[in-house]
Image (cartoon, rainbow, N blue to C red; front, top):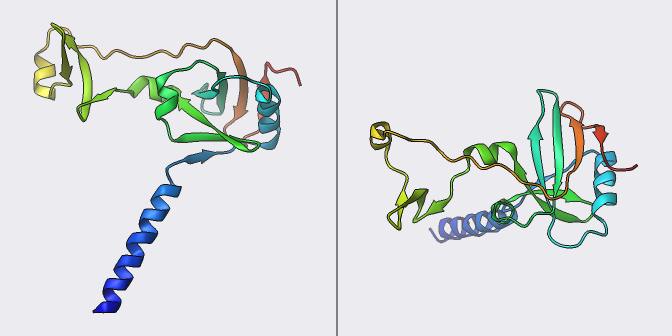
Length: 160
C-alpha cells in the first residue's frame, strides 16, 4: 500500500513538473529563415512579436510586429530565434479571438454594464448580432514568405 502511494505521489510530481515545461509551445523555422529574421531583429529595441498568416495552401507569411498589444502577452506559442523566444499570433487568432471576463467570453457593454456572451437561443433572438472581428495593425511591415511543405524561404523584403 505504501508503494502505491509513493508511485502515485511520484507520478503527480512528474506530471506537475512536465506541465510547467510545456507552458511554452516552441516553433522553429528553417535556418535560412531564422538567420534572416535574426539579422532584422538583432538590434531591435522594445517588444517584438510575430504574426503568421496563411497566404495559400502552400505558403505562409511571417510578419515582424513591434506593436505593443495585449494579444502578444497572452499567447504561449513562441518562435525560437537564435537564443530567445518571441510570441506568435496567427491570422485565425484574430478571426476567432474572444476576450474572457468573469470566466466567459465578453460580449459588450450595455448601459455601462459589461455583458457576458449570451447563450445560443438568446443570440438567435437578437435583431442585430455580429461578432466584432479584430484586425491586426502593424507599425512596421517586414515579412518572410515560407513554403509550408519544406519550410524554405520563398521571399522577404529584408535586405539579404
